[in-house]
Amino acid sequence: MPRKIFVTIASGGHDTERHYQDTISHQRNVEEVAGYLDESMVTELQSYTHGRPYAVWGAVSGPGNDRTWQTMERGDYVIVYHNKRIIGAAEVAYKVRNPQLAEFFWGKDVDGKTWELVYFLTNFVEVDVEQKKLNDYLNYLPDFTFRGFMAIDQSKTDALLSSYGDLVSVLKKLESGQKVEAVSADKLFQKQIIDTELKKEITRALTAHDEMQWRLISLGNKAKLDVWVPPNDQGRQYAGHAFKPHVIDNFAEALDIPTYIKNIDAVWKLGLSVKAAFEVENTTSIYSGILRLSDLRALAPNSSYPLYIVADREKRARVFEQLKRPTFSNEYLQLDKAVKYLSYDSVRQLDEDTAAGDYYEISRIDAVAESAS
Image 1: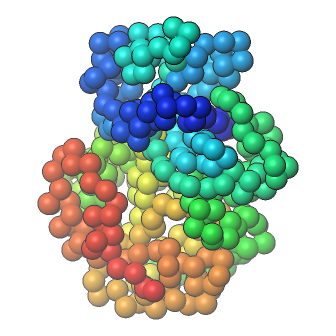
Image 2: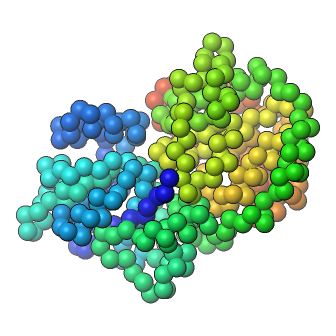
Image 3: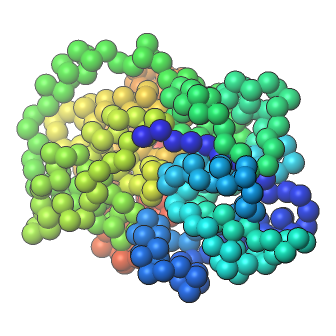
């Protein structure tokens, strides 16, 4: 599906900056707006955000703002802009024209109007990037500046997302001063080499692989995230736990999300944003799982979501040995830095120690994951 990029301005006076603090920096919850939305709207918003806090913003109604807002769809990006700097980015979760809700959040402006073109945002990330740095990747002139509530030209958006991947990851790289890599088919591994290696795999021991896949599904569900496993695995079960009721059956592809990610053993998502990807290694050679992650990394070189190899403790040294190979640790892929190792025991412990609805951060997994670098 095509994704659009919108820009909203979080400057223009004390009130606007206060509103930013009230409903973007300080995220809100669905329960507090239930009185302003009908039951079906609350259910839809709850379902999409899994009850997590959200950011919210709005625009005053007018011909230009109305046209822009009407084209906004779930999954689109929103850039938050302040004084020639990009200070945040998020994903549209829901929108509603609602003067009463807008007044609840922000009151009225000096003309007695409300910011009634309301949109809810999930996956909000704060950044600090000069706009002119992004202009290069949107094919704007260096001195071009965003103005008001606007949509980026779709051809520019498509070119950015197809060439560099998801917007938030690009912004994070620009913020840190890292090189933003273009996706290039020339940098991918040749398919026949991958096929040859995969054919060397010994048939997996289903019990161990399925156990780890189930526990990753369980952990993702407890954290109130969407979980994806490949279609061929969705009919599996472990210890009486059927996978299918606990995973999403549609990945909701987008231009900036490589289709290849659907091959990964377990993927955690919120909205369209990928939160983490896991490959479970249970074959004699651990090479195949790393190859799948290397393909994903090659197709999404700027992605900022964490990648994990899940393997038995006895394979730890071999995982690190493979990740450090020049094929994988080169400047483009940097798998030795991008991929972390999780032992079976760590995943079991995380699953058993995590209560439903815990909303834990990925940092809790990183605390027990190990890096090759």
